[in-house]
Structures are given as C-alpha cells and as structure tokens.
Image 1 (cartoon, rainbow, N blue to C red):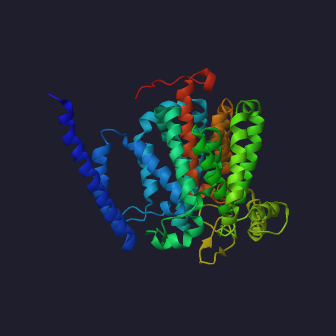
Image 2: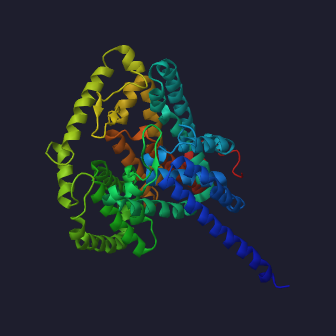
Image 3: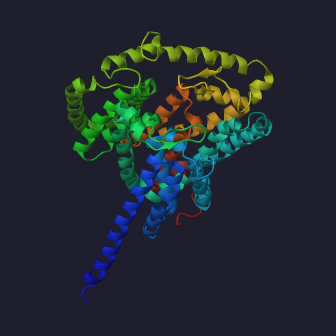
Length: 482
C-alpha cells in the first residue's frame, strides 16, 4: 500500500481547517475594529480553540503564551497592556503571565540552585514583602492607584519561567525566534510617521480610558535589535537591510534614550570585545559603507517624514543630543521640567527619617499634578530609580536595585565570551537608560520584555555552557530532563 495516499486526506483536512481558521479570525478582527474589542475577543475563542487543537500536539502551550506576551508587548506596548480580560478590568497580559509563572514553577524552581537566579529570587521576595506591607497601609487610601504602582513587583517574576523556556530552546532556536521578533518591531516602527491614520483603523482597547491597540512605545528595543543584526545575522543581505531599517527607526522615533543606549553599548562593545572585533573586521568593513550609502540615498525621502517630535533629519538628532548639555532643542522643555520635579521629589523623600526608610507609599501623585494636552494626569516622575525610592524608601529601593544589578552584571559577564551576545548587553544598557529618563519599569512592555528576554538568554546560556562551577559557582541542577 502506498503510504502517500493515506497522507493526502490528512493534508486536505489540515488545509480546510486552516481556511476555516483564517475566516473566523477575520470576522473576529472585523468585529473588534468596527464594533467592540470585548465582543471581538469573545469571538476569538473559536479560532483560538481551533488553533490550539491543531498546535497543542506539536507545541508547548506555555512556550506559545510566552511568545504571545513578548510579541504583544514589543509591538503594541501600551495598547497591549490595556487589553482587558472579557467582562473584567484585569489586564489580559497579567493573567497570561500569572498562568505561565505558576504553571512552570515545577520547572523553574530547579534553576534556583544557580547563584544568579537564587540571588534574584530572594531579592525579589524582599521587594515583594515591602510592596505588600505598603499595600496594607496604602490600598485603603488610594485604591486601584496603589495596586497600579505595585504591579512591577509581580512582573519581575516573569524572569524565572523565561529561564526555564530558554533552557528548553537552547541558543540556536532562541536565535531564530529573536530574528523574527526584532525584525517584527523594526518593520512595525516604520509606520510611526503614519500613526494618526493607523489609529483610525486600530481596534480600541482600554481599562481606564479608551485608546488604540496599535501603539509605539516599544521603540527602545531597536537598540538591542541593531546589534543583533550587525553581529548575529548570518545572511549578509538581511543584515544590511535590517541594519538600515533600524537606523531609520532611530531617526524616526527621536528618543534621546535610544541614542545614548546605542552610543554607550558601542563603547562597551569596543571595551569588552576589542580583540574579537578584528575577527569581524571583514564583515564590518563591508557592512558599514553599504549601510551609510543606503542612509544617504534615502535621506531626501526621510526629511519629508514627521518624527515623534519634529521632522526626521540628522540635524534633529544632533540638536536632541545637544539638549543633554544644556542647549535648546527638541524636547529640551520636558528635560528641564523633569530635572526640576526630580529635585522636588528627592527633597521630599529625604524630609523625614520615616520617608527615607519606608517611602511615601504606593498611589500618591509624584509629578505635581502635571496634565498632558489630552487631559491625562502624569503621576510618575519619569525616573524609575527615584520613583521606587520615593514610594518604597531605602528598604525596598536597595533590594530592587540589587535585583537589577544582579541580572545586568551577570549578563555582561556571560556575554563577554562571544560578540554574538552583544544584543543582550545592549538590552541591559537601554533598559537602564530608559529607566533613568522614563517610567519604564512601571509598564509591562518594559519590565516583562526585559526580564523575559534576559531570562530566555540566561536559560539558553545555561544549556550551552552546562550548569556547574564554571558558569555559576553553584551546585548543578538536580534534574535537567523535564
């Protein structure tokens, strides 16, 4: 009997199911855009269920959910975190994250024998104890605002299931998935100049206030994506194209934090990989001139596009960097206002011994009642380090900072062996810089993306190097088969 004749009916069934899935998905998306996002999410149950029936035999559901979280947060950022669970005010992404953390606990608890993860675990426990104690006092006074200010302490736990999944994937599989992830956000950000048109066609979501699902706050990640395509991408054509597109994104989103992240990451790469760079000299000599030529050729078109603050140009980039040394330029007003408010918050936080130790609490407005043109109240000082100190005091601040430094230092140490890991170094740099100038850790599209990508990479590195004294100075895993 020819076995090919037995396979043909199954292929027909799978193809038919695929077309049914596409049809159901199209209807659900149409309802989301035209009528109501909640109703659209309910209707998505059918295509999601059909998809799961096809994928589950071949895919781990927790792996799938983790990548849904990362793709959603990186692409749609503030819009994705405002997608609620149907008929509730609970963020959909927080529910998914909670499920993954709990579901994979039997897996990731084995990795707590590794010193860096053991330290991260106990430091995070210390942060959560302080946050819980503050909530006991602050929740009756500030309600949901206090809860909103405490979510970062939960989102940091995303690190641990990501480590377990990264270990399962390994370096090579992770590299392939990151290729599509970084390419997706880089291509998506090219639509930023046309965002007003896109907003009109975007589904509307919102937990506290309606807003378009399609948002663009994930631009910080392109600093990491740039070094991925410069040093890791094996196809030279793709490397050139994606590097050019990344640099175009950087000119379009006009973020001082991204400029500084690329600059500082480049300096660190020169320091850490100085000798290794000579082995990549042929690649860089070929890549750099081609990329510069492409930027020069596309510059006339770029100068006609609107950026985040003003028209796209190299002059805008230079003027923005000039604001960091006191010159006038795009965004200089916001910088001066932040410096003034930061001084006020710091003086207030140091006013009494109780505030120094335990902070002013979760929920209070720290930005002096500042309101945007759209009537949105800005409560956060655009500096995560200052905000955590002001809200939790030295007791919570020290544990939180040590948690961050623990991961950053470990990532730097483990990335020094290969220049292909420069992207994880850039990720640490851009998150630190963004946290100094934005309320980055207050939102899952930074906190969970940072812990998720760092965790995936750490897990893959553990698998690549093996768990033992060379890597962690700790005991090996009790079980590596699961």
